[in-house]
Length: 367
Image 1 (cartoon, rainbow, N blue to C red):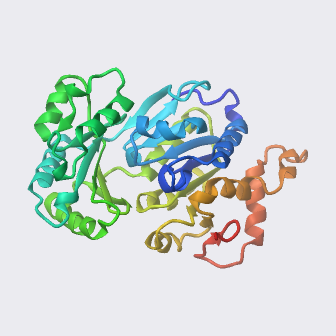
Image 2: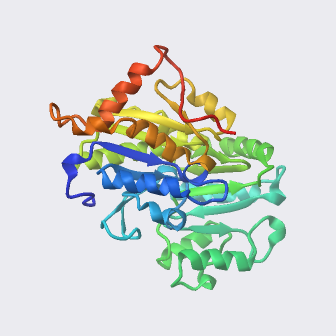
Image 3: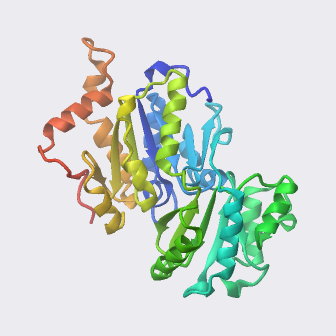
């Protein structure tokens, strides 16, 4: 694994954060307060990372300033580790669980055969570890695909040195095989179908259709309004996070605390992650703007927290509540090996009501 720090023995905690709807605000940008939180954690020798449904390059476009050490991409199908303390683009691909090619063929066929409601609004794309492809007929916007100009802009954004005309649209599995033979893509990590913000009912019916067609060969996630994605059935953000912990331990970086932030159903495995076999305490933090059904699913988790919304820099405010409540414990001469995080967590537990299955709400009320 990449050399994350010269002071590896000081790294006692890790911080993993979803991007869309969690780290970024409604405008799609990371707030200055959240950027500063990442920088502070990096400077204090914490392990920072993002865990996202995006491909690596797409993620880096919006989080460049946070300079994370780890990128868990494509909902856990790929993991990248930063190889240099300087610059944010030098990441090594250290883990990959792509969709099986036999399953890919079935997915392409299922999408082509789908004739259910919302088909005319459906946009499909497939993520490689680094970027994405779009499925559909070239220039046929009536099928719900991106038009030529938009696609070329997206292509040039992620592959500035490749001509978009070489492999613009993926119209079927054969096209993917052709791209692979050309050496342009090795694998597909994640696929996504978007029915639009008002397409939740379409998503539900399409999900049922896919489950019937593929019968356990893919892992299906709701990732926002009108959106659904699917990956290898062995993939989720929690499994990727466990892999990261194992690689850190191989490098003698033994973290004691893991704090995770999320907002959607694809974040639930991470929020529910159990690392007690490594003697690591996991605290799940759900931003207040999370959908009601996600809050209901996470409300039973012991020690979980509700932090302010993404537009109110909930990640940074959660960080301040958890890590910076009392700086004095970091200068404890009697027990210098006890980290500030452990001390703050002990104090937080002492103040917490003695009730199981509760969610603590952090910060002031959103208004």
